[in-house]
Image (cartoon, rainbow, N blue to C red; front, side, top):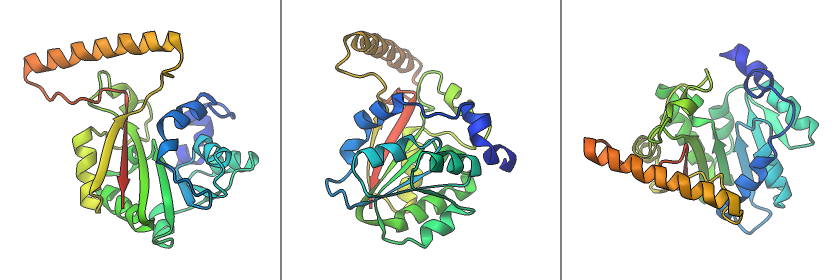
Length: 232
């Protein structure tokens, strides 16, 4: 997959510009998990086009940094004057920063890690966190209706997760304070989006009903994107 990652901006995003709608979404979903102390050390792993780095910078965190294995994403984010660096081996870089970061974000990254490397990768994140530090994880939610669309949208995805399997790997890596929620992309203050949100929730009720009839697994979180916050 090295050929794809080398030019990830071109072949994954197709545009040399940030998805600005993510700024509001990250504000809605993630900012509450960041500490009040603006001197806290924050890290974004797998920076993409730098939307989370931009948020960290905009939220006032002066000690933020991002890392990525893709030269194209790092080059693009540096062109936006975001603090980031290219790494060859993420786990090795993390293990050199033990007990360091207060918040680590891992957005749309864990599904790219090979199954046999997942536990060791998460252990390196655990070791990299300061005491009571948090990792915020975002993955495609395969317990959602049509979850396969996110799972197979990117050829570099190696594995898919539901709430139980994500909890399994996090517990094995050493985390025991874990909470889950669905990524919310509808602004609750926007009237038009509130109507869409209501319709979506009604559809999810129907999905849960059909799964109860078939005796299938019937998890609560049916958002297309699953989020976890785990504390050291």
